[in-house]
Length: 365
Image (tube, rainbow, N blue to C red; front, top):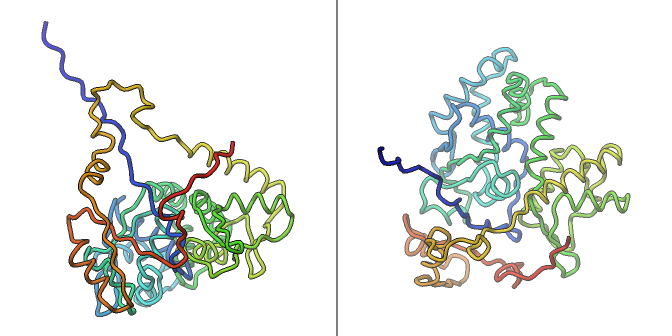
C-alpha cells in the first residue's frame, strides 16, 4: 500500500493593514463622474487586467499611455463612428480635462480607494510620492483594480453599446444615451460607496458618519440634512459633495442648503434597512490567536510577523519645518526609497489626538 500523497491545503487567510481614512486632507475632485467613467472605460478596453499603467509623462503633465490610448480608441471606435464623434478630440478631452490626469494623487486615492474601492491609484515611480503637493506638475500613475470592477463589468457586459454611450457622456462627449441605463449604472456605483465614511465638525465635535447616517436622519427629521458642518469640508466629505452634485446617489438630492430625499419615503425606508443589514454583515470580528483555539505551538508569524518586526526594529521619525525647506525631498530620497518598509504620514492642523492614537468607542447593538 503506497504512502498517501500530502494534501495541498490553503494557508491561513491574509491579514491586511487597515486603511487610513484621510478625513482631514484637502482632496477636492470636481467632475468625479468623469473620472469614474474613464477608470471603468480603461479597464473595459483590456482583457480583465489586474493592473494598468494608464498614463505617461508629457512635460509637466501626464497623458494617456500609448497602449492605453490605442486600446480605448479600439473599444469605442464603433460607437464614435455611429455618433460622428471625433476620436482625436475625444482623446484630447481626456488628456486635458479628466480628473485622472488633472487631480493630485491624494484626491484620487480618497475617491477610488476609500469610497468606491475600485482600485488603488499609485505613482509608477515611487520616488514621486510627495512631489505633487507643490506646483501643478503631475506624474505618471497606474491603477491596481479591485474585484469591484468585475461587479461593474457584469452590468456593462449585458448591454455594452448603451453603457459605453453613458460612459462617453460622463467623460464629456456630446452623445444621446438611455436614461434608464444611466440610472442602473448610477445605482450600482452608489451601492459600492455605501461603506465609505466621512467627517464633519459640529461646533468643535467631530462627527464620523456614512450615507446610511444621512438616510436615517432624513427619515427621522423629514427635513434637509446639513453635511457641510461648521468648518471647511475636507477628506472624503469633499468627494461626497461632488458625487451628490453629480447625482451619483439615486436616493438623494443635494444643494447648498443640504441633502433631501429623492423619491418616496417608503422606498428609502426599505433601502436603508438593506444598507443597514449589509453594513452589519460587513462587520466581522478579527481573527486573533486567542480566539481561534489553535495549538500553542501554531506558528504565530503567520498572523503578525510584520507587526512583531515593527515592534522590534521600527522607529518614528518626525520632520518639521516651513514650506519649501526640503521635508518632502528628504523623505523621498532618504527614507521612503524603493523596497523599504517606511510609510509617510502627513500631519494636518485638523487632525485630532484620537485620529492619531485611536479612541475607545461604545459598541452599539
